[in-house]
Image 1 (spheres, helix red, strand yellow):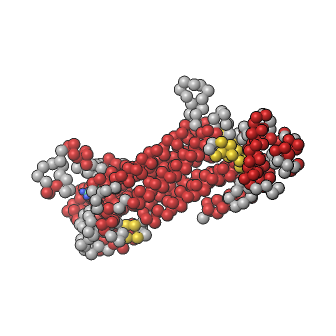
Image 2 (cartoon, rainbow, N blue to C red):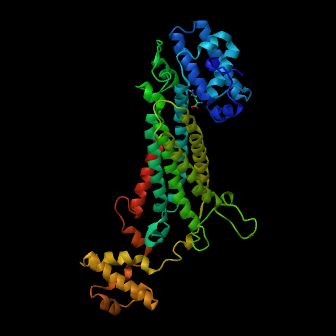
Image 3 (cartoon, rainbow, N blue to C red):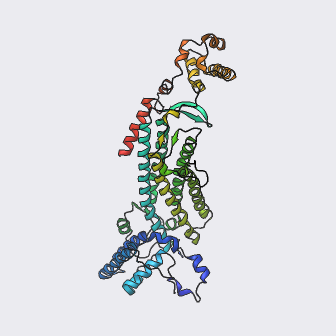
Length: 457
Ligand code: ARG
């Protein structure tokens, strides 16, 4: 099969080289974007006098028909189609004959790839932002339903201080909010149109790039043709945002996996998001969350692949850049499925209320006791030391802190008084963290209100 660029060649490429060179198997996914961009380009060519009115109408009608062929699964690729760009140009020529051969006037696949990719990412980005919003909604619902439940929080995976369970879940909401705003922010930098840059130098035609911009709905035109065909920063940014979003989910997945163990039993995953063991009949495994935790690896790998692809790559386009698409698509697909599954897990999660404080003892109030001493005028560092000795005595004697008599307490520090015995109350402990961002009822209510505002804009 002759190639579109075959003129300068005396011999065909080897079969091996053809397979090595073709990007069609993965870039056919960009057919819609390629058709949109080609259609817009035909309009600009019409304005530049390359197509007459009737020719342009025929070309645009052909693009509509090709669109239908793709939508209905009827488009047939041919062995000489290297990529989606050549396939669609070939089909256009089949449909409109000689006129079709003028579609590539002043155009290069270098700018087509970058254009299609930006078009694709513009849409995908919006869809992913919506999925994040869906997940955030489930998270706020769960937080609102668990705002009166209290759990031990952990630092270093050791029991730290009591917090409202809803406060814990709202941390996921706000981490996702960062992810959402990152995607929103980078969408500005995706929204720049390279078309009209040619292969590298720009266009010699009287090509009205504003027409292209309008037809394709871009916010801006690329200001430099060399940068336009070389740059993949918008993809790097997206791949980072994808990996970062999944890193967030993966950390929560890890907590929920631990929390669903028999030892914790804080939560139980719905059967719909668990699987069993082929051998051990009693098992109900949190595979959904393990996969969430696992999937992040490939998105980190995809980001790394794109960064290394560009490191040291000369300007402008080199074929290396053809390798940019598979990592991008993989991260997009992974993000879609992972966000959906995680939303399912969150919206069906069962909380085992009676277990939440089952394994905490009075030492979880150690910081509250130190705060109490501070209120009596003891400098914090001294209070820390006093409570440390109290906790150690409790451990040695195997006694609860609340069971120490005032005499015994006064031996450790004369400052202790009856107020000490009011400390060992979960609600009291969380209510004292009453600042903006804290875990008190009011603090959590503010967060949920803020979330409501964010979700309704
Ligand atoms: N299929 C290529 C890609 O995906 C575009 C081809 C550009 N090739 C060229 N010789 N200018 O990047």
